[in-house]
Structures are given as structure tokens and as C-alpha cells.
Length: 418
Image 1 (cartoon, one colour):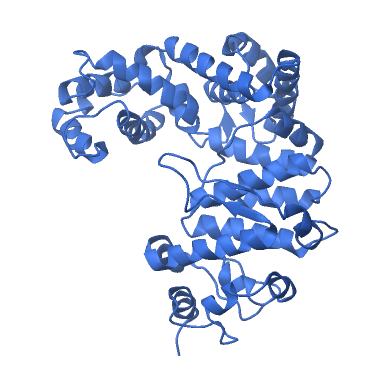
Image 2 (image 1 turned 180 degrees about the vertical axis):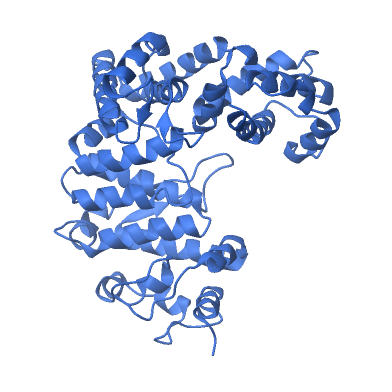
């Protein structure tokens, strides 16, 4: 007989059925009422690696099946269709098929969201909250991290817009499942910061994810450089100037809650709550009567440029801070813009092997690694990998991916030598 893995893959490829002899197409054609009242299909259309307490016949998304789901184009396409049908059921819509080049995936409320609230969102103990947790986990395990993060971001917006609608335990579960196989990626708005401070479960879940995100060397504590990177990105998200962040101040706050100049996983939540409360208050005082969104956008651009200007030389960046940059996309992108200009010696808009070699050598020195471990052959072979045309040179749009790749390649060597 076929294995559970074979049955699940056939089901998603459209060549098989679930144990009730239902095809995927048959389920996708259901109306919202049937999707609400039927309880033994969700484990098939949104499978996970955990045994279902409600359906003993549910398939398991084990490691090998996860690999298949992450690489099989037909399965990935149909899993995305499942997500889109589930979103419609919830009163949500996506831009998966309509987004412009470079536009991020996003999920938003539709015009009928209010009509779907009673069935899909309001408690107590709405079973669709558990279905959303399952969806977040399934997407992460199946390699659809962008869709997973888009769904998590939408749920976070709903938490802010409808305080008290979702129970605390479900909020914490969403954040946990939204980080399965991926790291938390989102901006902290003033409204979201307020929701975090008012929600113990959301705060606890976020602290766990932020700690994991910024503990770049995996030593179980956050050092000053890792805390600095976290704080700077928090200030940028809230539209605050970076010049108010000083090492002296951060060292004092770390000492207040931690030991030995570092924050452990147990000490971090209290520090984070205090820092979030302080920065949120700064943001509220700064905004006054101005339009918060336009102000935040303007300040982000200006402060990112200031941050990059203050780090014009790779030699000035300490290893831990430089490694923590890989968790701060906004800072990394702007710094790469500065570094590209610095190493593009002839200003022709492309980084050739000799220029890239100098950048790679300086990066090694900044990370405390031997300069002779960088070879011209290695650099020459790496450039075509990140060039859209496969050439041995990079433009300013291609450079950040190459730089981040080298940062990831070198950081493990840097930490192991400390």
C-alpha cells in the first residue's frame, strides 16, 4: 500500500485523494460554510510535522516530505492555492499573483472582512485560530517563508486593529509558528509596539524570536554589539534618530538587567520591554500632530544614510556588530550602498574582481580573519553567482547579496576563532 508520504504528495499533485476519497480540487471548490463546519480536511490541505489530536488519519509532513514540498513546483503551486482559498474564507486577500516586480508579498483585509469576523475571528476559543497556527507552521516547513511572513504580518496588524479579539495564548502561538524555519522579519510600528506592551503572550513570544534573531554567534546571550544592532533597527522602525543611541547608555541598560555586560535569554525580556517602552514614548513625543507614516519614512531614509556615513570603512565595524547586520536588512542595504561607492574606484558602476578583492580582504580584517585566506580565484568565482548576467562583475543592485553571502561565509570562521 502507498505510504502516508506518497498519499499526501499525490493529493497535492492532483493525482490522489485524502482518506475520505476527496481530491484537492473538490475541497478547494467548497463554499465557506462547508469549510467552517468540516474538521477533517484541514490536516490534509495544511499538513505539519505534528500528530493531529483531532484526526488520527492525518498525514505527517516529515523531513523528507518537507524537502519534496520545498522543491516540487506543482505541490508548491497547489499549496499556495490552498492558502489563497483559506485567506478568502477568512475575509483576507493577497497580492501573490498581481504584485509588481520587487514588491513584497502582502495579505490584507477584504471588503467582506467584517462579515467574516463572527465565524472566523471572534472567540472564545475560535477553532480558526488553531487553523491559522497550522497554516503558519505548514508554510514554514514547506519552504514558503515569504508567504508565511506575509500572513504573520497581516495577523499582527489585526492584533493592533482589534485589541482583545484574539486570546493571548493564540497570539503567542502565531508568533512562534510564524518563525518556524525562518527568522522574524517585520517593522515595529508605534501601534504594534503598544499592542506588544499590552499583551504578555505576544511580548514573550516576540522576545524569544528577537533573542534568537540577534544571538548571531549562538552563545545563548546578547553582547553589546548585538544589542546595538537590535536597538538601531528598533529606532529606525519607529522613526527615531540613531544619534540618541550611545554605547554608554546601552551598556548601562544591559548592566541594569544583565550580568557581565551581556543579556541572557532569561534577562532579555525585561530589558526589551523597558527599551520598547522608552523608544515608543520617544516616538509618540516626536510625532505630535504630523502624519506618522510620512514622518517615519522620511526619518528612516535620513537616519539610514547617517548610519551608513558613520560606517564608511569596514575596518571600523567590530566583528559582532558586522555579523549582526545580517539580521538587519535595512541597515545592511544602506551600508552596502556606501561600501559599493567606496570600492568602485573608477566609478563605472560595476565592481570588478580587483575591487571586490579589496572589499573581501577588508571584510576579513574587520572580522579578525587572516587576509591571505581570501584568494583572487575565490573572488572571481563568486562574482558570476550573484550577477544576473553571469559576468565577473557586480552592479550596485547585485552587490548586497554578494556582500551578505561573504558575511555569512566568514562569520562562522570569525566566531570559532574568538
